Amino acid sequence: MTLLQLDHVQRVFNPNTSHPVAALKDITFSVNQGEYVAIMGESGAGKSTLLNIIATLDQASSGAAILNGQDLGRLNKDDAARYRREHLGFVFQHFNLLDSLSNRDNIYLPLVLTRCDPAEMDRRVTPLAHRLRIAKVIDRFPAEISGGQQQRVAIARALITQPDLLLADEPTGALDSNTSNEILDLFADVNHQGQTILMVTHSAAAASHAQRTLFIKDGRIFHELFRGDLAMTDYQAQISNTMMTLTNGGA
Ligand SMILES: Nc1ncnc2c1ncn2[C@@H]1O[C@H](COP(=O)(O)OP(=O)(O)OP(=O)(O)O)[C@@H](O)[C@H]1O
Image 1: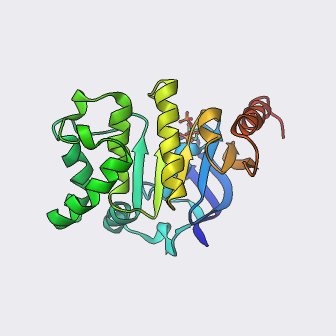
Image 2 (image 1 turned 180 degrees about the vertical axis):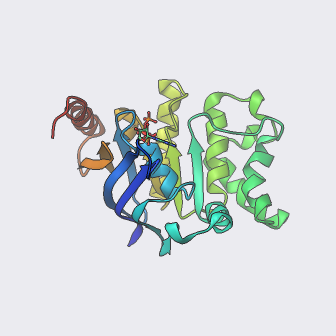
Image 3 (image 1 turned 90 degrees about the vertical axis):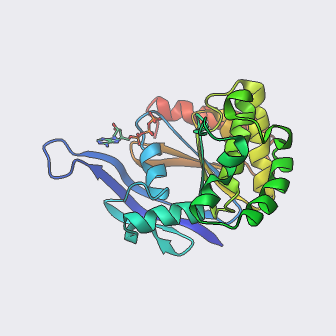
């Protein structure tokens, strides 16, 4: 079943000026329920613009982005904020935890914003904390735990609302390679349990954990690769080769 559909999405910044920027020129793709998709592309290719449209933080100039039947372009600002809280989870490169709140309160925050019953918050956090291996540090503060643990707390915060789609923007960009691998294994684990994930990354190693990688160049889909039955190292090599072709201006 299709969860996310982008249909001929264009995004032009500064239209009707002498210097319009066509950040997205024609993007069409879909993501099925339960899929794990990576998005790669050079700096300036349009990845953040695309992610912002899917995150309801920006709107397409033309074309449509539809998530679970909802046309995201039809949401006004307030509806978009509610939609984000209820249907999307976010994981960022720099974790974006609030230092003044304990890890537990950081995780609860999206539920607090939806006025969730505290008993329900407790009910949800316990299995999540075990699954993400943060049970022992949950009542500490972000500054008192490692970067990898902070990213696990951030993942718990993203998952506690049981989002339709988990959006990850360079989630391992601030982590060393061992910790990155732990986080990527965790994403794969979360995906195996049914969570749909869309991840923007510059790292072929990170993308090789996903089932499919979309490559963006100059605001268009340039290519896509499926992992299929490939070993992760072979898939990673294919991804690196495609990025090299893309960087060298291949078509
Ligand atoms: N608010 C804006 N106003 C004008 N141009 C913009 C704006 N935001 C992005 N752009 C331009 O749109 C294009 C795509 O930018 P975008 O940030 O989506 O790329 P990216 O692939 O995410 O890059 P990076 O990997 O460096 O984050 C770039 O040419 C950028 O300069």
